[in-house]
Amino acid sequence: MFEWDSVSTCSFFFFDCLINYNRFSEGMDSIMKDLNSPHSMGTTIIGVTYDGGVILGADSRTSTGLYVANRASDKITQLTDNVYLCRSGSAADSQLVSDYVRHFLHQHTIQLGQPATVKVAANLIRLLSYNNKNMLQAGLIVGGWDKYEGGKIYGVPLGGTIVEQPFAIGGSGSTYLYGFFDQEWKNGMTKDEAEKLVVKAVSLAIARDGASGGVVRTVIINSEGVTRNFYPGDTLPLWHEELPPQNSLLDILSSSSSSAEPMVS
Image (cartoon, rainbow, N blue to C red; front, side):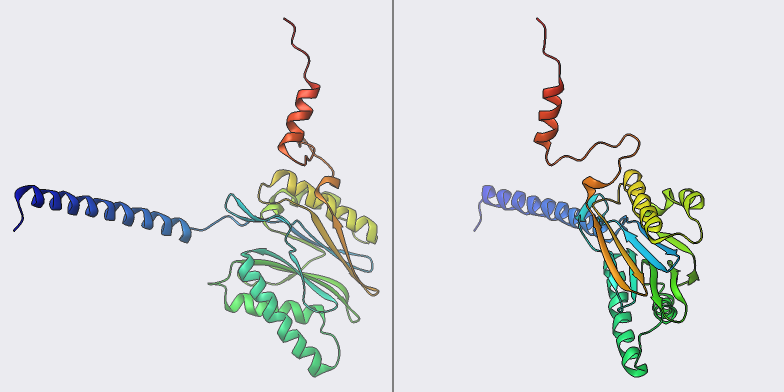
């Protein structure tokens, strides 16, 4: 038989557990709401045609909201020997689409006995993106070279539309580049001119877009094959109000202290 003190202690203990449970439930609801809420997934991808082929370029930052999940990712994925894909949006969605398309193109090549054209690859991506438009969050740029049509660039934005373009830009960093490309892009560029344009454009997007960053990767596709190039972040040009790259916080503090004037008593 419980005494009064024991009953009151048990009651207080029960109410204390109930309060803690309610707090835990509210905390879990808040966590699940944060997990299920949409996150900003930024990037910068570019595809440019030139006289003889195409050049694809991208930054390397994979972000989840304010968190940088991967600072050196490769957003230019190989589909076949002559066709590559620039991915933006959800990394999981775009990787899944590229895996499916790579499998289908491999079967297509075996059946025909020759490499698939850029148009075939782009239409496969369009088909998957359009048929699953309510579930996918992926903006894609297809680029490549084939013996029938030469170098081609196709944009496949959200929703599964397919547009053949002389150049295509995508991702969150593209909003800073439309006017730049309207002025700088020209028909019949050489390979070096086109690659310099792509690297300059990605570095401009990195300077303005907080969700783009890291290094710049380019892929050159023409009749001679495929060439991959890599541009580290500390070799990219600096733009307005950009700070030079530092290896660590200690470098910044040491440089600021060494440049400071001595105090005069």
